[in-house]
Every structure is written in C-alpha cells, then in structure tokens.
Length: 224
Image 1 (cartoon, rainbow, N blue to C red):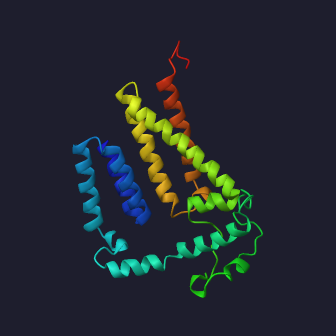
Image 2 (cartoon, rainbow, N blue to C red; image 1 turned 30 degrees about the vertical axis):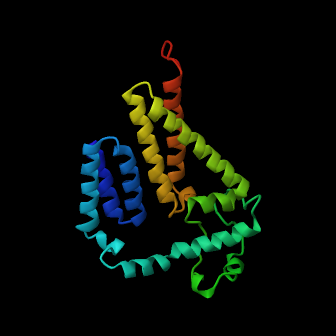
Image 3 (cartoon, rainbow, N blue to C red; image 1 turned 90 degrees about the vertical axis):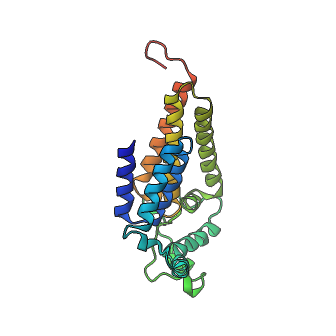
C-alpha cells in the first residue's frame, strides 16, 4: 500500500496540478479514514509535499492574495462561462456527443455575450468541467440521468462498505469509492470526456458492479 501511495505522490508532484493535489487528498482521506495510523502517514506526506517541495509555489500558499488573483484569472473560468452560454441555447437536447465537442458552432458569437474580461484570445473548444461537459453534450435531462448513474454507483459502494461480507469486499468498496472521488474531482477542472479518464470512469463503474455481484450473489461452481 505504501508503494502505491508513493507512486501517486510522485505522479501529482511531477504533474504539478492543483486539481491532482485536491483529488489525491480527498480520495486518500476517504480511503484511510478508518485506519488512523495510515491516515496520519498520508496526511504527513501530503503536508510535506505541499509545503516543502518546489511544487508548493503553484499553490501560492504563502501569498493568499496572489492565490486569489490567480484563481480569478484562471482560463477555466472563461471556458466554463462560454460553455454555459452554449447550454442556454441547447438546454434540452444538448449539442450531441461527438469527437469534437462544439462541432461547427460559432463560438465567437457566444463569446460576444460575455463581458470583455472573460473573452479568450484563442477560444478553447472543450469544456473544462465534467458537469458542464455532460450538460452541453446531452442537455439538462442527460445531466440528470448522469447523476442518477453516479447515485446508483455510490449506493452500491456504500452498501458494500457497510454490509460487505468480509474485509476484502469492504476494502474494495472503499477503494472504488476513493477512485471515483479522485477522478470526479479532477473532472471538475479538466476536459474528462476528451481524454483517457472517460475510460477510467467506465472501468470504475464496471469493477463496482463486479464487486457488488460478488458480495450479493453466491458463487456456484465458479460461476456467479
């Protein structure tokens, strides 16, 4: 377990992304909250990386005012405000789920609706938020169905964690829940459905289904 924690820590240290830091912190805290010893080790490791390493300069923890300025000027705000304008014109059906998020839409026209300070010199045609990404592609009804799928997944994991028939099942429930927390957190700041994470989502949901069936259905002659 310590090895995997080390690998993850090195990964987000190299990436130097604030979203990765937040994702691993939330996921790790959830996974270790039952094991006080490992939780302490995890928190100490996160604290060391967040305060000692050069990566801490990305957070600007020593200068809260500058940190707030950087957050306000983050290009993701401009991207997401543009996405909201597209959603306003396509609230029910969305724009479709294709390889190119916005297809042939005139994004300049949508950008003109925004205040000048939110204009992009080179428009990024890809939502950087998982919620807005689903909404712009599938509309509000599609977003509601997406959250329904997530709620079913979380209910399955919760039942496994609380009522798993052994520690193996309960640990898997916590593990898959932590994985989902990490990927979803990163998805709040990145274009998840344009990269590998969409495959990771499907893998997490599939593994949760397998564990749920193993936990609820008897195994007879090696067949569930």
